[in-house]
Length: 109
Image 1 (cartoon, rainbow, N blue to C red):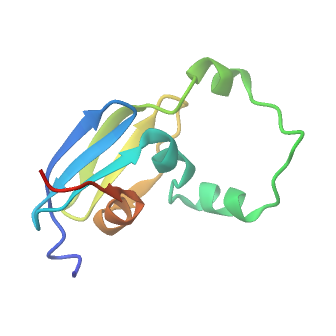
Image 2: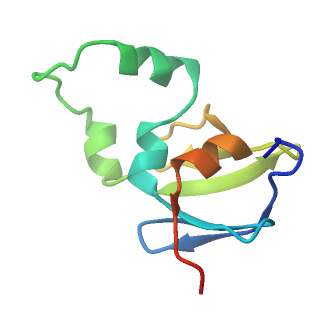
């Protein structure tokens, strides 16, 4: 499916994640944690390439934020969504293709 054909009909909060109904009849669900952990911004991409640090200490801001939760989600043109997270991070722009790939396909109703 081309990017031009990939179109969400609706995006909804659903418990701990994002439920998307796609124009081709597919429905996907992605947890907020997966979306936050897979942030496509350059900083997060670089951080994922580094070896895991078992001694990393969470900042006060990270502890206070709690589990990842979107504060705002807005369309970027007709191809992506930018998410602002409760930890203050907001530089990731998730393409429709990325949202589709990160989601778990749910059975048809």
